[in-house]
Length: 126
Ligand code: FES
Image 1 (cartoon, rainbow, N blue to C red):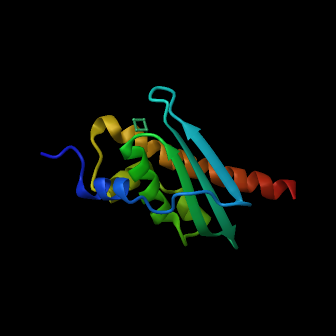
Image 2 (cartoon, rainbow, N blue to C red):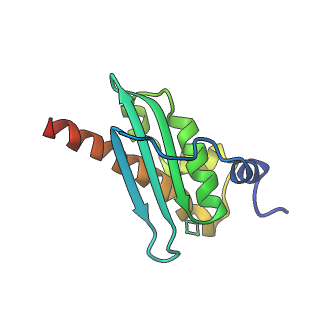
């Protein structure tokens, strides 16, 4: 049996929403100390809706596929829905990840949560 689903391979080969958002409303950066992979998420938020999202991931194929899928899942959605996104939901949307690669999807969940926290913190400063 193939280790990775077709969807994982497809999002790894052609990741969606790669890049940087200048003047992002929220930026989240997380890393995994064990593997050394780093993920950065940029959010543009308007009226509590995530109008744009981009990511930069310096990591393994599963981390890239997870970031790509996670951005697709939260784009156009309310902030509350993005906050509720779990790594399991990301992995399921990718038709599963090998057990040893589940932590890669955790990075996506955490990066989004961090970016939303940053958005709330920035709003308070204003
Ligand atoms: Fe660490 Fe994939 S091996 S994020």
